[in-house]
Structure formats: C-alpha cells, structure tokens
Length: 50
Image (cartoon, rainbow, N blue to C red; front, side):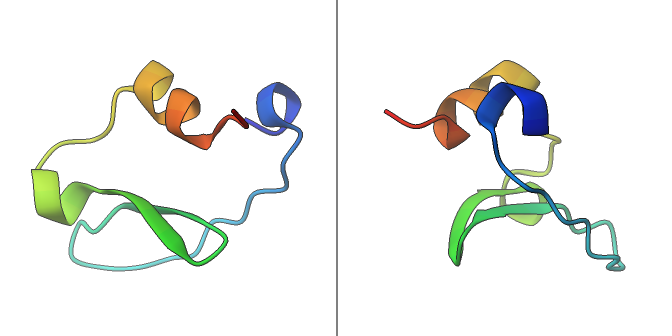
C-alpha cells in the first residue's frame, strides 16, 4: 500500500476479529460492520487521492 499510495501505514493489534481501516481519523472500512474483509482494489480506491 505504501508504494501504491505514497502513504505511511500502521498496524495496531486488536482483538475479537475487528479489522478497521482508517485514513487520518476517518473510518474507511469496518469488518465489524460488514462481516467480511474488504476487497483490496475497492479499498485502495477509497484510499487513493482523487
């Protein structure tokens, strides 16, 4: 992701199967809400600068 978006990433350990993706402080994707892991291409599209 860093090479594709030019962004620095950080992985924070959690529990309970929660997988959230945040951009700055904004929630972009939540596995807890959807029940599924995100499609990588769709997620990159949400994170890419417009």
